Image 1: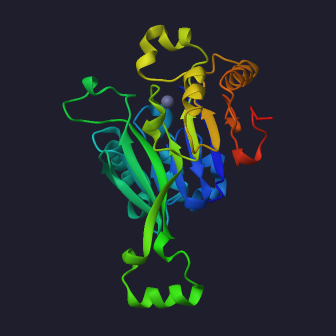
Image 2: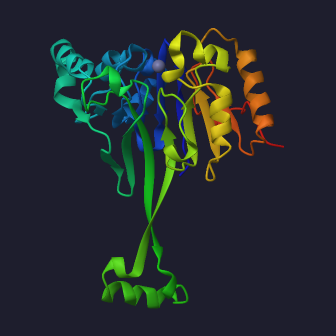
Image 3: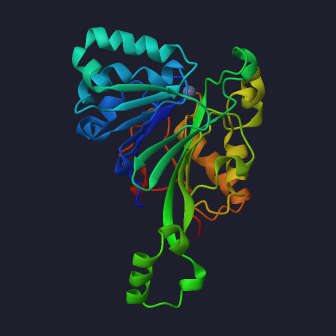
Length: 298
Ligand SMILES: [Zn+2]
């Protein structure tokens, strides 16, 4: 699948990532409507990771402009009280939103069908530690998008096209094909670093990288909630299927040059063989994968 990823992401201020071919928006921070403009009308699903204001404050204007034809569907962690409050407000303030936007509080493990073979899966992250919530509640989610494709079972691999056609008429489909699942994209959302295996072996990873070094990460007890560029790049080097890494959610304490230099130094250190793109503080990027990567393997 050819992904067009657009968006913006600056820690503390605003984050949203649009995945255009599948009509999906991860988070909806301030300015989401302005970033996407008329492309906002193509968004069918908004997958919200948590209720920090930089991830949801764009919902008011986005929904006001783009709620039509029974969409979008807004998915959110079911134990976050902020989303029902926004629903209540927008229902009263913009009545056409109430008639079209659907809201669904979801739990860990929720799977949402996006297209016939394409699914969105939600799972927990540790951005909002469970110790800070009532028992059993999860208030911060990460998301992966996976595709299920049919692959002819190996015992039939020597058959001709017409023979396979006949077989399909004679036998149930699950006797002829295996379902192969591939994760095309993972969105970490705000999160402390995890093991490489945690992210479901994606081809494209959008990961937060709030800090450039361990010292800043561990100051003010931020380490439990966010990630650093060195940690994320080291982790990405251990992901066997990864084709593209997209970094965002940088703290605006850093200038663009500092961020680029850190990414390049870490990519070199870990001998990264894939391109790394970055959405830098204050940038609004359309189709980031067609832009120049910050790191390109030689
Ligand atoms: Zn954030």
